[in-house]
Amino acid sequence: MRHYIEDIMNDRKSGFGAFPVRIFLQMASVPYGMAVSIRNYLYNKKVYKALDVPCRVVSIGNLSVGGTGKTPVTVLTARLLKSSGCSVAVVSRGYGRSGKEPLIVSDGRKIFAMPQEAGDEPHIIASSVPDIPVVVGADRYRAARLAFERFRPDVIVLDDGFQHRRLYRNVDIVTLDAENLYGNEHLLPRGILRESPYGLRRAKAVIVTRFREKTCRRDSIERMIRYYSREIPVFLSEHVPAGLRKPGTADPEDTGILKSGRIAAMSNIVNPESFRQMILTLGGDIAVHHVLPDHHRYTAEELDRIERESLDDGAGLILMTAKDERNLPDAFRFKSLPSFVLDIEAVLIEKQDEYLDIIAPGQKKTGKL
Image (cartoon, rainbow, N blue to C red; front, side, top):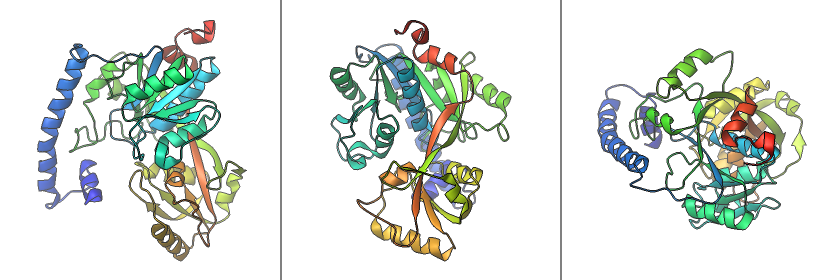
């Protein structure tokens, strides 16, 4: 049922049977949209007041329910700030984690929390920027206070914070997928939008993710963005392979391995097609792609089945995302097929200094915020 609803939300399902479900979801999106608009209005008019922390806050968020490549952009932003001389901490909700209270995932030297305690994406962030503290909490204000009191950063990078308006931020950055900017432009639950694209007017910049010159038209993308926010700066980024390794290790492997045999891909991410395209770009031959729901936590039985089916389809290895790795059972190993993790990172195609001027104005010139 979940897959069926998601197919309707993304206009992948049509026909007589889908029609009443589509109407019901459209009706349900009306009160949702009204509630979001009223809440934003009250924050804009300062009836609801955002709570401040004594440092700069840069939020990386999106308009949709996922799949825009936001986490790699959070890592990119944290690294840029760190390299420019800022002390940085990252704060995230920690979707799917076992607790709700604020938790220090990493102090910038050591990771203390397992993926189940931290959430898969914050754990990936902590591993990607091991010299930057990471704190999680359902209440982003309390988590940000903990991050400031414990680490005294110049800047807090708030992961997935665009709709979390209770915490005041100095800069909002919105990520949009180059090939799916607004989905079908419907609000939840009829579509994938958390709020109207007019919400871009609150942002200081947009980062278009997964941009590819061969398949994406820059002028068309910028026109579609500036229809909702005329003067907003637009930055283009692409996702690139950051390395290949075995699950549970940090030791790099040669990506040439991916050309040595047919691949069984597995992914529990919102946009599995982006992972498939990355494998093809590296010259991999995909025998089968096992697609699971976003943040799906695997059981040993499921993984045994995936391995059997992969062998039946002629695969010589199993390739997964870093999010899949964080959702494997403890100490699990495939019995017959070697397995690898393909790490992915975001890079700005151009205008890096301009982006730094937005997230930390004057930093690269004066060394101060």
